[in-house]
Length: 102
Image 1 (cartoon, one colour):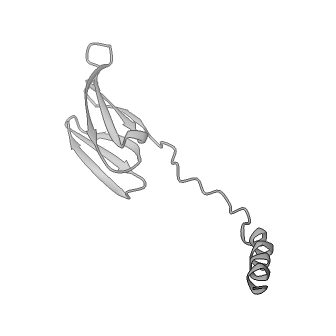
Image 2 (image 1 turned 120 degrees about the horizontal axis):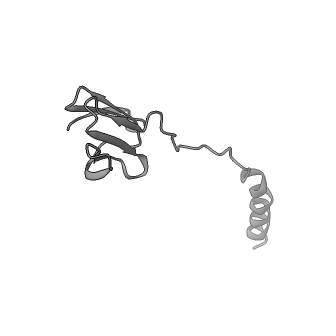
Image 3 (image 1 turned 90 degrees about the horizontal axis):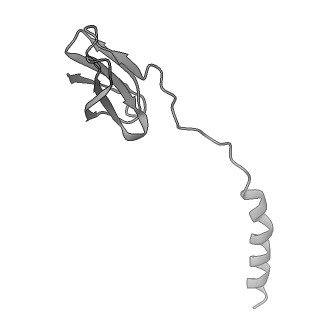
């Protein structure tokens, strides 16, 4: 009968040493190049990191009019147009590149 309280007391005495603060690891990534305008000046691409997508805006009229969005990999951090019809997206966490036909 006496063994259980002693074992419990030993466990409680060891627990503060085991519950040390671990260093904080931040997995949040900052955008590297989150905006780009197509060569013809018609499209604006925006990396929406939190939503894992790229948003496209038609800016031909001088106003940013939403034109749609495309789901890409996890944590898109950079977007670049390649010519007028292709958009490359770098996804940090999923370690991939998405190529979007605009």
